[in-house]
Length: 294
Image 1 (cartoon, rainbow, N blue to C red):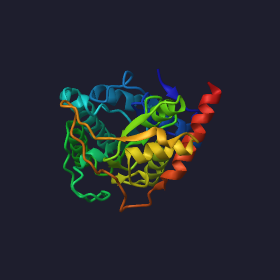
Image 2: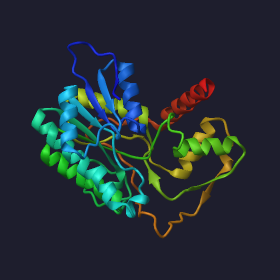
Image 3: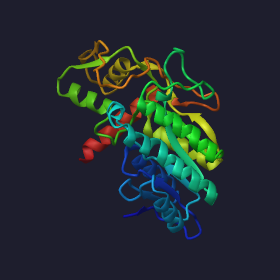
Image 4: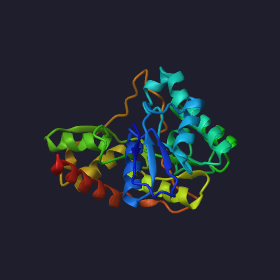
């Protein structure tokens, strides 16, 4: 039920919620690599919207910090599943913030570039005003407000378009799989984002947690580019035919969530994550390790 790192007798762990997801799995890897004691609970093992369940987990684990990697991630589906999205993305983090304040525990939770509307047409910084266009973004903005109102010492990390070598369903993994099989990929060339390599994201998040950082921080790899350019770059980095990645017109289905055309992030509070080119090379290398081990 509970995955644990080898803990020192005197060390209190970090409690990782949503441990079965992309962020949660990477947080576990980071803690294991760095020798940080942790307790990791999946959504099935801990419903963060249930105050009594969270209180029981805190009493049992005695963590010094909670890193919340749980959340509703299906942006388009959220338009029809608004209650479920708000429960996971806004109510859950609020419950955690309340319990963390009562117990004197540090909290880290993750937000999104989709709290912005894209009207500025330049990278967004932490002090820019939010104006989400869709249900998912509104739940993330609500979580930011409520968490920091309840627990001002909490750390809220906004990130964007993340990719991981361990996520088989990620955009870049699907691009590589299709191009490597000789297929053609048609990709949106109009929307600009700041792609974020998950191992870099969680490593910096843990650093900020240990350093006692608080408030809103933007964490994304250095660079702002379209999904099309990103797909072409990863194809070239993998020595595949980047010409197989072609531009398509941005088509928005009637039931899809509205998205900003420009939601790149940069930070005014600290250095960015490593340059995207470095992250793509490490992603390709790690993907090769995973394939060879399969």
